[in-house]
Amino acid sequence: MTGFYWERHPDGPFATLIAVAATYCSPDADAEDYQRLKRLAGREDDQRMRVFKEELRQALGSPDELPKGELENAVEFTDENEAAFLRRLWRDLYDDEPA
Image (cartoon, rainbow, N blue to C red; front, side, top):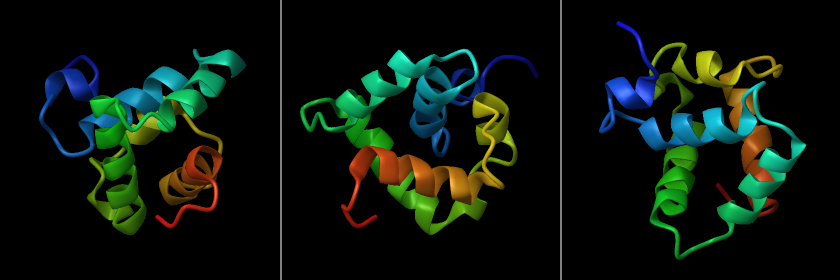
């Protein structure tokens, strides 16, 4: 099966988290993209970002529930594992707010 996870499973678990992370955190993204994500993350009036934040919160609590390998394939992070990437992402975007 080809295509991105969020295209294959638009209503699948963590589809928004993976899509947003791929857009703003992948190797194809640049530093300005990541800064744009930081600005978007604080927008409470943006439905997609509210879903992203909730899915990120859920993934932090249960990283084993993420679709196997999909986040890593989409982002190609350099952190030691998905949980470390998620913790760093939360810290970068939401600072001291409890997850």
